[in-house]
Length: 143
Image (cartoon, rainbow, N blue to C red):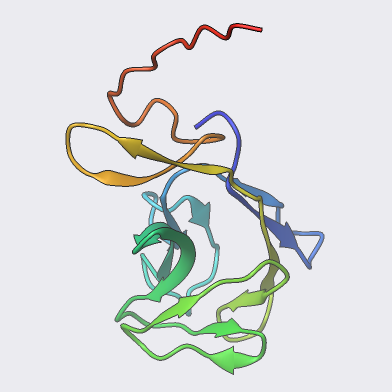
């Protein structure tokens, strides 16, 4: 992806604002995390922020893992191993003390239905144009 599909706007000047490019964005203390948190109260992988298909809709989802630490969305704690849909403007807090607070900013996608080898499914024309192997047929217009 050349453009982010989401941005996490920091609420604490000590933490960076993050752009989310991957469809499985990991948050935690592990070196494998996309958002690396320096907080001993948080597990290696605390949660994942995913871009997923739900029928003909693409949805941003926060998936809490079964580790130590807390995740809150708009002041409500997300249970372990639970998923919650994310909306633009949601406040996300990672950890106990609230030092890792962000506001999600979902970048709008433009979808088209593409009939590729695998399925008839929506493809984001902004981000996923190279994800399917499909044939584009030029159309000649007569005026």
